[in-house]
Image 1: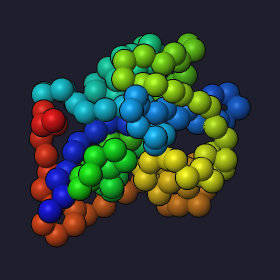
Image 2: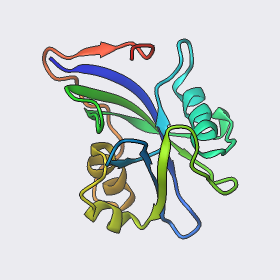
Image 3: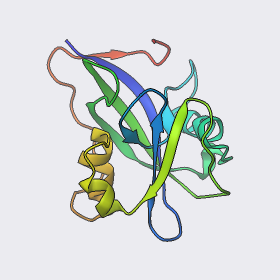
Image 4: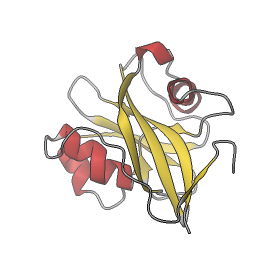
Length: 154
């Protein structure tokens, strides 16, 4: 039975409408910046902290735009679903790869959707929404037998 991992993810767009994709060290899949909330941390606070840790961008939680919550397959954890709180963030400064990130790139949303190395959250939700081919954000029901994993779990 899959477990559920709660995460916060951030959609960053540059002035040309390109989306920022990041890849963590030791993985092959591109995704949005973000990660697991610390115990007691709100999803927005986690997103704000992860932006600073991973990219050196300081965006207060109050400046993040909630875009919805989505549940689906995790990109890098076997037999795991993510419960992703998705936020939009204003681009303030030049992001730089830090912490566990190995690579970042700016990609046109249509070109990103054509890639084979992107996370399910990007492929099934974020990019189609940006391209106007999907309805508003939704929270998918958990599959039968799935259990939510607390944010503090490894």
